[in-house]
Structure formats: structure tokens, C-alpha cells
Amino acid sequence: MVVLYLVQPYQHWEFGFRMSVLRGWLAWVTKYSDWQFCLVVPVITGWLVWLRRAELRRLPWCGNWLGLLPLLAGLFVYWVGYKADTGYPGFLSIQLVLAGMILTVLGLEWMRKLFFAWLFLFFAWPMQPLEDSVASPLRPHTAAMTGRLLSMVGMPSVSEGSALQSAPDKAAGLELGDRFSLDIDAKCSGINSLFALMMIAALLGYLALKSPRSRLILFVCAVPLAVLGNIARLVMLAFGSVWLGSDVAVGKRIGDHQEMSLFHTCAGFAVFGVALVGMFTLCWLLEGREMKVNLKRLQKTAAAPILGHVGALGARRQILLHTGVVVAFALLTLGVCQMTDTRYLVANAGVRVELPLEIGTYQGRELEVMALEKKLLDEGVKLARTAYMNVQGRQIIASVILSGMIKRSLHRPEVCLPGQGWTIAESRPTQISLKDGSSFDATMLRIFVDKMGEDGRRKRMRGVNIYWYVGSDDTTCASHYEHVFVTYRDAIFRNVNHRWAMVSIFIPIPEESGDEFVHPESMFAEFNAIEDAREFAGQFFPAIREPQH
Image 1 (spheres, rainbow, N blue to C red):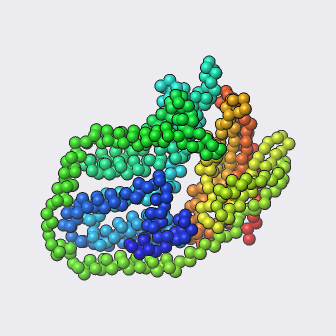
Image 2: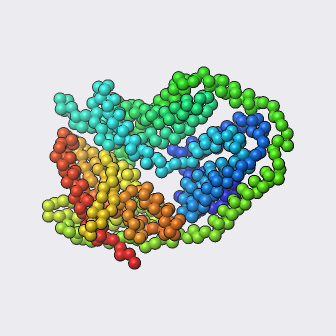
Image 3: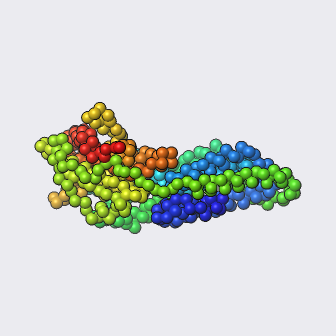
């Protein structure tokens, strides 16, 4: 275990050189404050084992060969992560190998006693991919529920996507968003506190409750309690904006960066406050009386006299055999890793970065990439952008971002766009048709941004963005996570390291103000923009596609 997970270089992580699974884990969770609660999980897991130390000492060592199934699966997953240069298989490998070792060397009864502690260890691993995939669908629902609640308490609100704004009031001369305007970004969706709250719910249920049904109810309720806490935070920010002003309640926006105010920071604690109060109340309602009884039972078990003797460990020859098999497979895995070719040889790009100046009826003009954009790009990443216009006046901006030599150097538009001030109203798959009768899948985003005009009125600019990923062998992927999956799949089983490119087609829609935000003509303009974007994408992709040999 020490050699596999603490010594053996495993993945580059974000630090430019290969680090072992546990060293990389420690550096990663220390760097990102949202996941620093993972650091206490191994300590709590050890404490949970310590609580049952007397029970464990009395158990015989009766190894079971069934433990080879999770052991071998864990070692294979370890190799997969080593070959693909990604850390998450290493986390799963630790869990599987631990289960395999307990079953193979100690037996089923040991696994039964240690099952909760083993399961609890899963909270030690930062599941960042789940952060975006869970947060994105959660944000519009949270905004909608908060809007309905605010309307019920006498503050009419309108929600669109992840944006929440005060409703217009013609009698008072107020337009949409004049009283407050909030946007629920990924960090404020409640998802960052969800994993920590789920950990607390699991631990509280184990210590305070005895019924598996009650424990499961408490654990599952951590999700709606986190959402409820975030709704309370948004209500505080809405009322704070009305009473104190947006700059005090939310913070000032400086360029594309949102400065968080002290009030905003304090309101963030409402997520934990509401959720924890709800969690303890639910625990008390379920079986709160059991907490003292359960804790006394655990303490009594830990203090119980140790019975039995060394002979209870079973046949020493069998123990040595089972332990030796575990060690042999671990050494074999290390040997296989040493013989595995981990050179990162990137294949040729699937698209050209030089964009044509004529696409169908559209004429183009190359746009200069801003210095700030170049600074944000990873080393080796290339960006080309061209603005197109047809005789009808339709404007389209096409961008091609070619990844560098480092994996994961392309960022998700769903993450980049909110950082630039855009709000994503809708994200859904769409299909692009080509002239040869073939088609490919892409992702369509409906986005908007609100800004104050020179006349003091709030202006809204809408846009339609269609994007997709292009691999090195004419592979296309519609979404970020699909291209990540294909990256690792082909690196492991085809020995192909794609040099990915992301193609983006953006159509701006004319600015609107006041009641025009929700005017039917606005929706019709978006529909036309979506169709024009899909048609243009079908003409643009063949023009930049690199011939495959």
C-alpha cells in the first residue's frame, strides 16, 4: 500500500511532474479550499475503527479468496489511471484494494465490522467532475424556487436560467432587475457544501441512529437541506440588495471579476446553518433518543475485555499464504506499470487553426485575440477567431481553440462564460447536418448578459453559442465530459492521445431593454439565431477539417 499509493509516481496532477496518488491528493485538496474537508476524513475513519477495536481484536483471521475479486479489480483500475495519467482511478483503486485486503487476509466478518468505516473513506476523495455535472442542473431549479418564495413574501421576482431578478414595476418606474439582480454561479449553487453536508449526515446517522432506514433517510435529506440553505442565502442577498444596495449586499463587479462583499460572505454561512439545523432536527425526529444509547454501546464495546488468544488468529500458514498472494499481486502491478509506455505522444490535430474568410454567403474578417485571453490560455494552446457577416446583416463569430501538449488544457464554456459575466439560460444537445448527408452532435447554449446603458436603463444582450470538440482522428464529441471519456478510453485501449480542438459558433442578438426582455419577438429572434448557427456550423466544420490519412 505504501509503495503503490505513496511512493510510486502516478499522475502529473496540476503540478507539472508525476506524483503518487496520496501525495497528489494532499497537494490538490490543500490547494482548493472547497475540498479541504477531505483532509479530516482519514482521521475520522481511523477513529471509527478505533471505536470497535475490542470487537476486532476478538475476531479470528479467516481470509476468503473472494477478496481477490475487488483486489484484482482495484489493481487493474490503478493501472488504468497510471496509463491514462489521471488520479480518480487511483482513488477508486484505494477503496477496492482495501476491501480486497480485508476480505482476503481477514475475512467476511472483519469486512462486516469495518464496512461503514470503509464506506466513509469515500468522502476523502474530491469528486470535482460531479461539481459541474450536479451544479449545472441544480442552479436553475434553485433560482426558480427562490423566485417563487420571494414572490410569496411580497417581493415579485423573475428567474431565467440561473439568473434571479426583481420583477418590473411600471407604477413605481422600476424595470427588470432594478431592485436586485443575482446570478447563481457554480460556487454559489450549494454544491460545494453538499459533499461536506453528506459526510456530516452519514457520520451523524452512524453515531446517533440505529435503524438503517433512519440513517438512509438522514443521508438522502442532506441534498434538499443543502438546496434549502442556498435558498435562504439567496433570500438574504435579495433583501440585502433592496435594503442596503447591491454593492453592499452582493459586491462590486470590476470588469469581468465579481468582488464578494462581507455581507455576501456572511450570507454564505446560511447554507451550513440552515442545513445543520435541519439535519439535527430531522435526526431528533427520527430516533433522537437512540443517540445516547448508541454512543454508550460503542464505548462499552471499545472498553470490553479482550477475550481469546493468539491461537484465535487461525492457521498461521493460511494467513501467510493469503497475505503473500496480496503482496505478489501488488508487486506484479508495480512491474506492469514500470513496463507500461507512458510517453505522452500527441496525435495530429483534426482541424486547422487558419480560418477561411468566406463561408457560403458569409464574408469574414479575422479578429485579434486579446492579451487577457492569451494570458488565461494554457501553454501551447492556439486560438483563432473570425467575425462573419452576410448580406442580411447576420453577424457570427467563429472560434477554434486548439489544445496544447498538456491534457485538459481546454476549459468548459459552461465554466468560462459565467466568469465573463454571461448567464446560461439553457444548455441542451443539438445536431448539426453536413452537406454530404452525415451529421454530428454538439451543445447549444442560450446565454445573456445585463449591463447598464448610457441612459441609465438596464440593457440585455442575448446570444446563442454552439460548440463541439474535434479529436485527432475525425472524432467529434458534443460535450466536455464526453471528450474526457474518449480521451482516456483511446489513450488506454488505442494508444491514441488526441490533440483536441473546441469549435465555437456564437451569434449575438440585438440589445433589449425594459419589457422587451420577455417580449415574444425576443424569443422568435433567438429561434432564428439558433437555426442560423446550426446551418453555419454545418458549412464551417468541413472548411476547417484537417484531411485524415
